[in-house]
Image 1 (cartoon, rainbow, N blue to C red):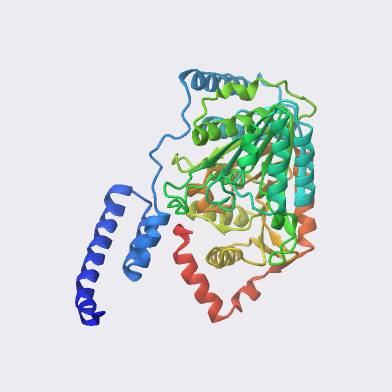
Image 2 (cartoon, one colour):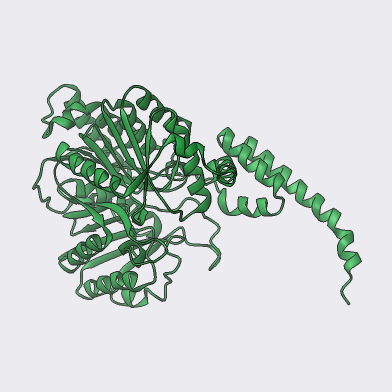
Length: 488
């Protein structure tokens, strides 16, 4: 017979034990993990206001891998990269470098920042194709996969187990059967719908697949943070994809909850493809344990058909450098005329927030576009809170209403731009692995400005008057969500 009195008698002991564990974790956060102060205070608040629940959240959300060296380079690889970068930096510094565009020459301090801080080489023979429609991007990717002659390297954060995801796996399986070296890397959390069973036919055909940070216990993934959020594809080492689209029917605008899906991806021809491929191979080597050499990215003959300058900038929680955030900050603080930003999640840290305020107060036309509907509720209301604060500094805010806006783009002065996987939030800056393409070409920047202005026609502007009239409930949601910003 169940003894309720015995259970009740144990509750004080359980609460004492839980309190002790919370205190020990709080001490570890303060003295061992060395998180930033706001993140530390947020976790301590969660642990003590929500005992039990806070402990579970901490277990799933707060692993610290910033001290781990994940993407190791051999001595030869490190020397080759450092040597090539040093040579290019010296040429630019000595005014002996031939820039293909006026914009690249004008932004050479930006180029140097990415060279020295993010080890991002500048390539200048690229032809770029901007894609803003999911169906178009997916059709192009499938066509390029079908036409592959030597190799296919694919990496996406999310591959859904729907007809779109299965179509990708089916086409990759066909190419593997043809003897084409085919690699598929997917994030174990983002692509949790895809199992080894779903990839069995692909592997039998000779295809290679790997999961990024798979769970140690099946179906129990303890790492909700530190996900590989990159979206990269390289075909034959000659053409590459990088941007914001994932693989699934919702990204083709075929899910009622979101409606039309507005995103931005970039297709690249030129030497920039080699740097995209190098990023893939580093991630692949870590996840698959296959002993690939990084120089494989540079074996293929380059299709030089353009003049666009390009740097591939990546970042992740294995480093504390926050390379993409620094890149965004430099773009904003160097702007003279305009800054156009599209992002689904806007949860910046103080440095980004102040950079935007300073630019707007200095007379720069700063515009930020966010979606009208949430896919992550707390993030949405935190976003609303931060853009509301920027209104007081003269930043213009637009809420996209033609479906869901998922693009992660920045365009500055109609001269340079960034397209990639990194949002304007602390998760992208600190907790996920991201990759962006920084473009130095006014012609391509102009196209992205035109896309932004076209999207404005499908948006409503959030004015200071309208923001002040928000309800008490919305103010409450904003306050709670903003308090949790460092954990989102």
